[in-house]
Length: 478
Image: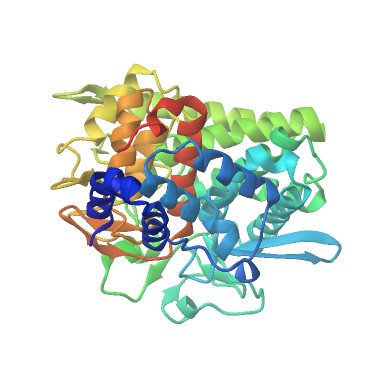
């Protein structure tokens, strides 16, 4: 019996059971149907008392039993399954795998712990764990600011070193240049400082990584040619490699920053990736704030502020599209020559997710018009069947990423729309109690990646935000 059928059946029989004194039987059936999918306590990688309290507190307010079960499984999934924490050379050090891939992405690791950051001041162990991730990310950037993911053992050569023609170093897992990787490292450090007030993370090592971030952004404006980074892979999948012997598609320098790859780890079609350039503006402003108000290096702060303003001005000039049906919208990619590619990909940063990353105001007319476009069949990677959402070329046509539905909810100001998102997510987890990378638009049991901690924790963040801002949504069955 499917869970939804079970819920309906038990609802119809509840009165009869009460009359016959069978509530205990119904309770046992319910417990068996919604059995926790979390690892046993002794098998969990990391535990947080405050996170456990939040789970209990929120769960009590979720009327829908299936949604409650999913939240209890998903929200702690990063802590339960992906954290490797230790004290290394007297400093906390945290390595966070993505799930079924035992490597750490700068993007994923930040996104995975981000929902726990607001709780850090109430749990010293949680705070220290996140501090350890800031430290580890700084080490990763210093190792190679062009790499997107890293090995736990810094002496190991990645399997990709056999096929990737680029400057692979021991300790790097993959060397795909993605603007957002460096932005996420800044986002975590800034978020940790703003939340906890602990500025000790901005040590000499972190400052070295920050200097490399600015240097890399400037190099990838490509004002003086291709620069130091090229990448091509021996592969039959064109999304995994770059044209022009690893330089990527041609661009006209205009102030924007090249991102050779997208957050999906797919290569860009036009190298100026607009969501990531917006993210870079936000990150540079954060670096300006840190160096002005904490470190006291006004010269470097000004460099960050100046580059932020240059990219912002270039976005205003090159990254607005007059669409026939939607008016002025943001394109996904441009090249500086005037070419603009209009689409959106589910991976964050995406056009849809810009308010979530504090890159644009959710009520900005440009964003709202873009939002309507990306969640429509005018977006080449919006898929609609029995279910709907945004996907991307990473897994191919007709596969929706739950991440896009979650971001639609996280960036929504409508309680009805948030409820719709939660209902879609509840109906597409394929009876597993977890989110997946993607699922077929007509058959959620056709899904990719059974263990994808980023999306699990992001789903938990949506439910928790709904609890805080629209608790009435959780008081009804979906």
